[in-house]
Length: 293
Image 1 (cartoon, one colour):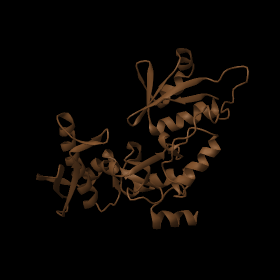
Image 2 (image 1 turned 90 degrees about the horizontal axis):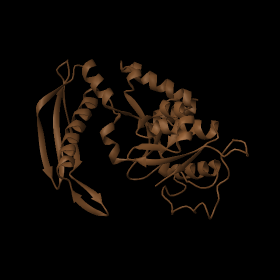
Image 3 (image 1 turned 180 degrees about the vertical axis):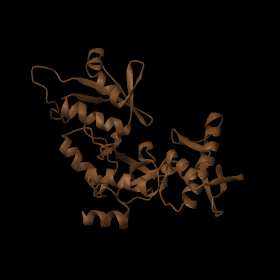
Image 4 (image 1 turned 90 degrees about the vertical axis):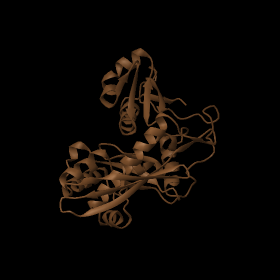
């Protein structure tokens, strides 16, 4: 435990803590800042800096965090905002004042273009409006954290990082599906993933052998006489869409709706809930999840 704490304090990496310790650390941080942990003001993120290096597990402040901080410390955003556009990048600079009269300034920048089919495309219409509003929100959150003396990552800064995964409510680290090799055994996949996160292997490798070339071992705990229940998973943006035969969906309806929400004949889950659902459905119920691109 002392080595884990030392790594947390020096490197800011929380991955060395146990799941129980991560939950305790989360609650202690909330109490030290007078934040309500039930509102989930922070989230865990497993990420790699854009410049490379090893993966790190850290906390980032979300919308609930900065709004509570503004109320607790009496932080007011001072108008007007100062907005500039240079080389298709919009920057907004804002000022803030707390209840003691101390002031601070911070800025947020967002590109007004995106990459589509390998080409740079300028934003327009609704996408342009969303980028403009995101820039203002980013500046307001950054100045709030700054004037409160906190160096946490802000939710709006995640698009500048390589997000690899996060932490479930039980404190267990999960990995985004595009980081997990979809062939071979779970133990082999874990070894490969650990090697990638430690920098011993490239994060992105050539496409893995197809199931026909390398058949995966059975993951089901169900009796051989009965086929394992199977569901289909498709990633839609930041969420996971679960679908399958009506009989299978109905049989596991309680579990599906515990971790997700209904969308027509399908169920949508965020990354954190999907990781917990994967463990329950595959490891405990002997099911199979078929990933669909």
